[in-house]
Each structure stands twice: as structure tokens, then as C-alpha cells.
Length: 372
Image (cartoon, rainbow, N blue to C red; front, side, top):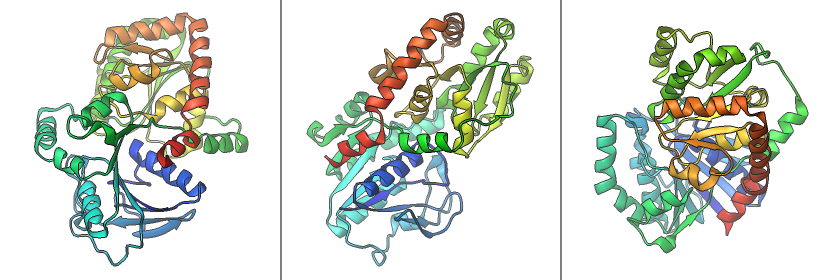
């Protein structure tokens, strides 16, 4: 097959959907299929390039309100550069790229598959009000254009089922690119991360945006700051985003700056791997998620996980992680101390988590589900 992947953002832009599309495209190529990616030019990158046999076309974007790149080509596509595709696969229902995919479907007369990466949430009144209006009046029309729909979890499948025949919806989880990780490990078995490794490390990896819940993790750190100092524990935050300033301000105002290290965004995979390998607990206090790759990464490296009991976590990780209610910093603090005081529990979670990732959540498995 020749497959066109349509996504609002792609590498070098960093995020979960970008990595998802990259992995899916690479594994489709390994299985003998041709892949082309159409996306926005945010951040600035070549308008056309070919990487490992995958063609990438990036369209100039004028702005990106509410994280939605407004590329004129998404609204007025040119058919001159389009070859004979067999299928359009679009990602992110909440974007102008979805309009582009629908237009191409109609003009080319080929099937359209949408993958839903979770409901968009901004955790502020204006942003979420706009999303609610979009879901009521526009999203049903976009979904109705799809010949097939993929959801990453049962809860997202139920959401899509409010608008479309459930027989058109398939649940396929996220996956981890095990081969790339193993290759990096074989090339560089260990490297310094620039942090005093005599400390025990709690790790957070993600964009600093409200729905990731980093503020609740920092409140938990404040609650148990005395105990963490006694145990020699620090929190490492890998990521950047619009909340960075207020989060740093909270850290300094509450005098826990000795317990928190901000690395900023790390784009080099090897350095992120090194942080996972040297961490003792991974925490993802999200308020909403599609299916975060970071959970799979932490479990692959044997790091016990604490997450929130939102639907996707309950479906896939209820017996593999410690789950606490969203926004509940006290329960989160209790969970951190519980793992710190119970290394046997950490060991059990470590073993079970890695076994599950290796057996079910690899891209070798995921791509076969897509092809089927």
C-alpha cells in the first residue's frame, strides 16, 4: 500500500502524536509499505525531505491558536504533488489537518482512517469552552467522513461511539520502539546525566501544560519535603512549556528548590534514556491523556510508576502502577512515600511493568494490528 499520513505536527516538533506518527510510519515502511507524511512547518524545517525512504512535506503555517497550526494548504490543498495513494491516515481530530485529510479523501476517492489521540483539554475556561462547542457542532461532521476510526483506549472508543457506528471503531494501544531503544543501549551502555547520582530520583517527563498536572506533583513534593530530604530524594522535571515560569515560581516561593531540578526539554533520546535508567520512581499526574509513551518507557526501564486513575490508566495499568486520583496532591505524596519505604513493591512493579511492555506494547505488535 501507499499510505499518506496527515498530522498537524511532526518532527522536529516534539510531542506524543509526533512520536506516534514517526514510529508508525517507520514500522509500516519496514513491513513493505510506502509512506508519505504531510504536516505543518512548525518549527521551521525543510518543506520537502526524504528520511529513511519516507517522504515528508511540510506546509507553511501562519499561526497556531489553541495548538492548531493554521496552514493555508490545509484549507486549499494542491493535487499536483499527490501520487496514487491507497489510503489516507489522519491524526488529531481537533485540527485543521483533519479538514485537509477530508478534502483529499473526497478529491482522490480513497478511504480515510482517523486515529483519535484523546480529547483535547486546556484546563481553562476559554479553551475548554471552545473545545466543547467544537465537539458539539464540528467534530461529528469530521468523524462522519471517516471510513474507519482507531481509539487508543476503551474510554476514547466510547466517546467516538457517541458520534459514529461502533463497528467502525477499533481500539489499538500505543507502543514503544523497542528496537531503537535497544540499539541506543548497545551503542552507549551508560553516560553521566550531570546530576549528583547519590540522590534517589523521582522523574517527570512531559510538557509543562495544565493537563499534565505537574503543579500537583510539586504540591506533593512540598507536603513530604522533610521526608524527601531525609531519604535524599530529588525530583527531576524534563520538559518545557507555558507553565514553566509559574512552576519555578512555586518551587522557589515554597523553598523546595533544593529538591527540584529542571533540565528543560531534552531532544537527545540517549540522554532521556539515561535519566530513566537512573530514576527510582516515575510520576505522571495527568488530568487527561490519550496513551502516553512515557509510561511505556518508564516501565521498559524497570522504573515503578505512579499515575492518576484516569480511564486510560485504569484500563491498561491498574495492576502495573500505583494509581491516585487526579489533582489529589496528598494522595500523590502518600504514594511516593509508600514506594520509597517499600522497595519490595517497587521490585514487583518493575518486573511486571517491563514484562507487559515487552509482550504487548511494542510497535512490532501495534503495526500488525493497524495492518489488519
